[in-house]
Length: 227
Image 1 (cartoon, rainbow, N blue to C red):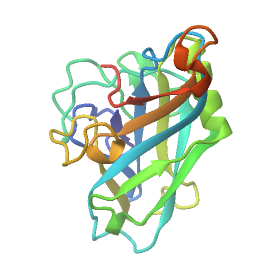
Image 2: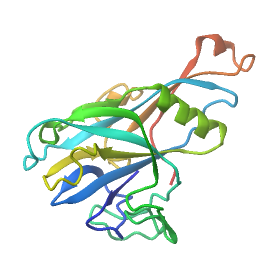
Image 3: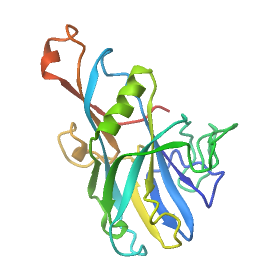
Image 4: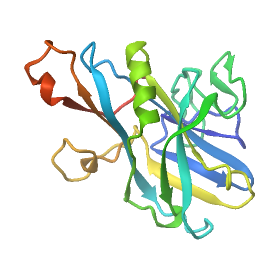
């Protein structure tokens, strides 16, 4: 995953320990995610999928009140990059506001994405510290994952604030832990609430005859995107 910012359109933040989504001084802040689905058995049917993220800090300077943050499917793959939280030290030519990777500009700045909303969470950026937020499953979310899986592709997504608020000049900054967060919280080490890092939870039914448990379905937690 990596944050992309309209105020620093050529910077990459792929190795930052937190992500940003919202608006700041008239600039738009978005985050892109990419998850490999390669561990799901071939021929499986995905039945449910969700993305869980954990708030990293409260932004007390944000406008009070909850707003919607939407998840969309990207229509162009990207390179995560190695830029730090200051947007520097990227040696991989990673994603930024104006390009999916070095030499490959987005068709439209800010990411090429399907306007269909996969899932939504509502959050007040001023009260998100260590709170879990889950983008719940939906038919659109499942269909996007199934298509990516069957095509042998990563599931690439973009998180952005709803158009009602994005870029209206007010400060609304949602900080959350990235896939480069360095620690985990106490827990069983299996479920998403045991981790700082974003987690994709996938439920699927294997192809008939492939696995004994096929009739009961299966599940998978996918915690880090490909580099």
